[in-house]
Figure 1 (tube, helix red, strand yellow):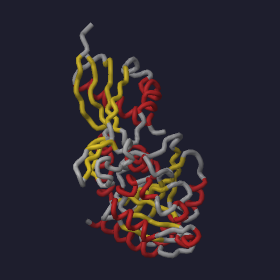
Figure 2 (cartoon, rainbow over the protein chains, first blue to last red):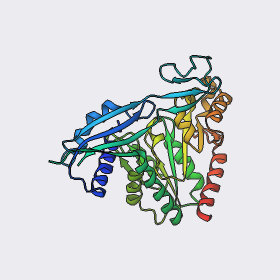
Figure 3 (cartoon, helix red, strand yellow):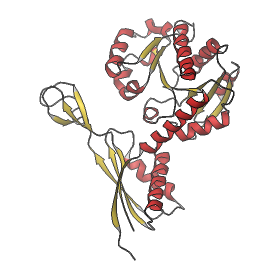
Figure 4 (tube, each protein chain N blue to C red):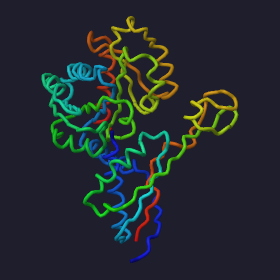
Length: 113
Length: 223
């Protein structure tokens, strides 16, 4: 379980942005989490209230977009989902690929004023 | 009340830690302190390997050890008998150390009189690989009973480390452990990795490892 420490980092970054851009209220925080990153969205949701309790972010909504773990086959160029296909290319049956997406862990945007 | 507007940020959340780690690494370089981040599964013989390493290098360097553990000081007690300066970092429920926690640990350890610090990370091969601690070298221990297929199960860890120590080689024959197969799998993930098969129990292979390490520490301090 490492999500709490991570969420504290996110809250810190958002508070910095608020200061930089003179924002007073944040309504929503949107994260992007890759399927292959070591972060679990449901755990983020669970520990978020504890991380922001007592801060200016206490009433914000946390929204998470999951980014699929996709790869491009080095043999035939097919793009496919690594988890669903168990890493094997569905078109030519080879396990030889470059990662296209899925390791992301980004603070995408916030809704604020 | 003003209307909410959407503000694009597009910032990697790991970025904050990466930046912090880079600062810490530069600072340690300036002060001539070599930090090694040591990772492994629980029970791989990390503490015994650390003891052997200290024994081999204690005349060359002033050594410190930070023992990260969920909640005990068993390992710290053992290591303190080696003569190295030791502190215990209790991480509560956390399963990895990041650059900020490492820096706090170094501050409480006190590095003014040290050349070489070992960070014994938490026994875990998953997320410890994702967080740069600011170390000069990342080392992992794989022990023979864990099996020669471990690089297939935890590719991220094997891909990011500089050094792989394969421990408990004295037990290889009891576990059907194929050293060549491990090397092949690891080099596919990480062509630059250095591999040292050792037995921390018998001492086999330890001098190759510590000679390599000694050079790395010296280079770090000189260049």
